[in-house]
Length: 140
Image 1 (tube, rainbow, N blue to C red):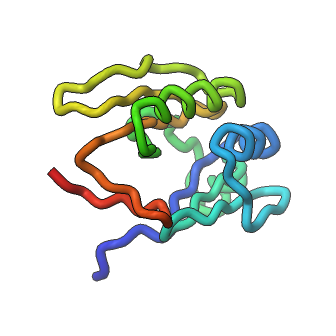
Image 2 (image 1 turned 60 degrees about the vertical axis):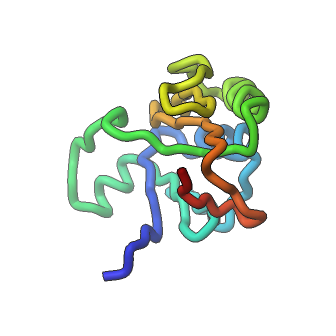
């Protein structure tokens, strides 16, 4: 099986609030939207925000576990870009989980939660490269 992820879908309580966060906070543009789901074209995969009740129905699974057992990461080009991104995300409704600091392996990172409590790490890692299409390459 090919090593890839096609879509990450997040359950959300309020689709309009979620859209505001991702459009104003990250600056992303939806490629598809209806009354239940919004898709954002990422660099090689899709991110979907799906009304939680509709996602539960779609999966035939009730009482989805609330977020917190995972984090999504958004890597940026510099330490200063971490601070700027976190400030922009907070202005769009994010909750600060961890102020930016230097982790033991180096770099710079902080954590926020979106309006539905999904955790996002905003990070700069000097050993990882980000190309013009936003593809991150692991390197040490």
